[in-house]
Each structure stands twice: as C-alpha cells, then as structure tokens.
Image (cartoon, rainbow, N blue to C red; front, top):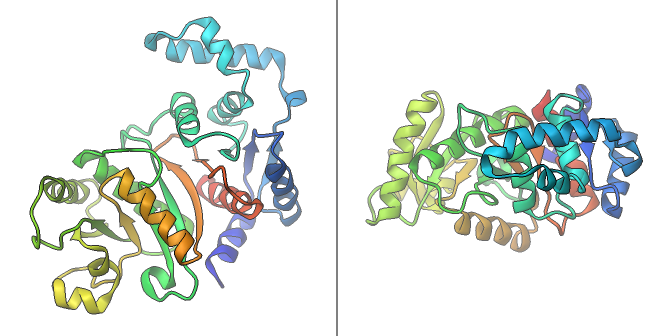
Length: 309
C-alpha cells in the first residue's frame, strides 16, 4: 500500500472532527465533499451562518484575556475575529473540533500566528514549528521514498534547543502518522567534522539536546544529505553512522535551507508535499500552501485526523 492510501485508510479507521474555516475557497469546498464521501474525517465546514454570535463574543473576550498582556485591546481582539480562522481556532482549543486545516487563502505567518495565539505551544517542546511529509515517486531512499522534512515553514533561524525540539517532534509525527521508526538526520554542509563553522557547532549542540530530550530516538549528525540518505556514500564518508545512510527524517539547519529543499524535491522529483503540518501546539493544526490542490487539502485533513487519534 502506498503512503497516501495508507494515511487515508488510517484516518478512516477512527474518524475525527476536523474544522475547515476557509468557507469561500473553491478547493476547500470540493475537498470537504471528498473527505465526507470517503469517511476520512467528520468535517465542520465553517460558513458564516454557522457562527453563533454569543459564542463569538465569548471567544473574543477569551482571546482578549489571553493576549492583553501583549497590548491587544478589546477592539483589536474583535477585529481579528472578523476572520473565521480565529473562531475555528477557538473551537478547536475547547474541543469542539479535534483539529483544524487552513491555509489555501491564508499565508503561513497568518496561520502560525493564529495557531500559536489560540491553541498555545506545548510546554514540553517550547516551540511551534512545522514539517512536510514528502512522498517521492520511484525512490528507494528514506522509507521507500517517504520522508519527513523540517522545519520548512515557521522558524527562520532555530537555536540549538529549538533545532532539537524540531527533531524530536518531527520524529514523533513520523512514528504516529506513518507508522515508521524515525531515523533522524541533522543536516549540514559537513559530515562529522569534514568542515568547520558556527552553523555546524549549532547542529552538534542540537544533537546533544535531542539525546537528552528523547534518549531512544535514532539521531545522527552533522551529516551532508548524501551521507544521510545514500548508504553507499555513508559507508565512504561516515561508516560508523548509526543511520547507515537510511535516514527518513531530515532536519534542516534553518528555514531557508528547508524551504528551498522541499520545493526542489517537490518540483524536480515530482514529489507530493503534505503540509506545512504545524507541530509543537496543544492541538493538531495543519497549514496549506496557497498553491495547494484539492488532493493536498484532503490529505492534510487525513494527517491532522491521525494526529488527533
């Protein structure tokens, strides 16, 4: 069974309620029909007529109480709730939905801001970040062509502690959603001391922190990408690697590298890129590329539903 079919089937095995707030987006409307028809999730398609004025007023007040320490006024709180995204986030926060998917008509910064402010960051990780599930056709690397790439959407310049948290939560997603043993490579332009630099030192510090946070996680680095995913290269450059060139979770040193990397693989290898899946929050939430297809929305909902199971 291929990765996408497996994800949809797993979502169907225990359907969760996922809210879609982009009610005027044609792709989302079509995706909602497919999701319901295939039983992938129970969909709340949040059209404006479904918004309860009393609930909205309560959410605005709750949001204001959460954000007033940041200088948010009651008027500013009311203004953000002109967008159904915030109403949907607050519904998810209090358990009226198990997860949320949006981004077809919102930018990633808009999505991340709303998610962090409303859903809150998991204290264990201390950071919100993102990943993509990459499914590369006719590929023997990774998990038979399936990878998790992170962070490609949220954190511009992660420090060592943040980079470690990105690695840990990405590994957890790989295990939960894909049912695989995560093999995490911390990427760099150096393989185990073949070069020197401040960025390499950051990756090394991050690996030590990963081992403290998640001692059982298979993680190695710093590794060039060919040493991480090509067994023949790993044997030459770093024969003692515990990954042996079989990494399936790739952690990029910064957002610039991650964003470029996933888009190159998506376009040149014609890979499916599911995400950005927002990690590190108290509730499952997935972003979408504004260039997403209907199928992308369906599959992001399936992933979000699995994360909520």
